[in-house]
Image 1 (cartoon, rainbow, N blue to C red):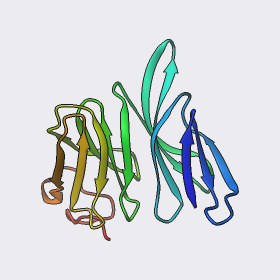
Image 2: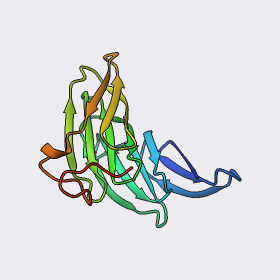
Image 3: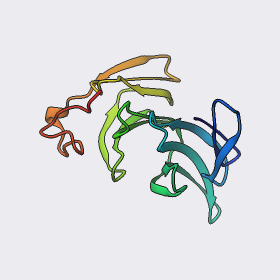
Length: 167
């Protein structure tokens, strides 16, 4: 499968035939970033909404089987990079406020906020073993973050006593 996003819509495609499989009305305006999970059951998207005269920026996790939104996070700042971990249990986002956030996919809670960029974060990715995050953005700096699961206040879902996600 493959996924694309534009003008508020996220489309799921059969990569072999090029046929559309599903359409998600993901955001009311632009889709800035999206990531299809490795097993094809989840899509993470970041976009923008105009609600009651103001703009809201949203990150949403979608179940590709049911077409439903599993959770959403509403932010005052635009999120321009989203990525799911290799095992689909965690997500990473990069925002205009210079932060990178690590999310628990099961409930949408923020596990870590990584600060250090002085400009917008345009790209963010997790290593396959979940030990590192890499981010880059407007400050022309690429940052390598080591995720210290032992010091995390809230333990990763299913990871046990501070263990990183499985590869």
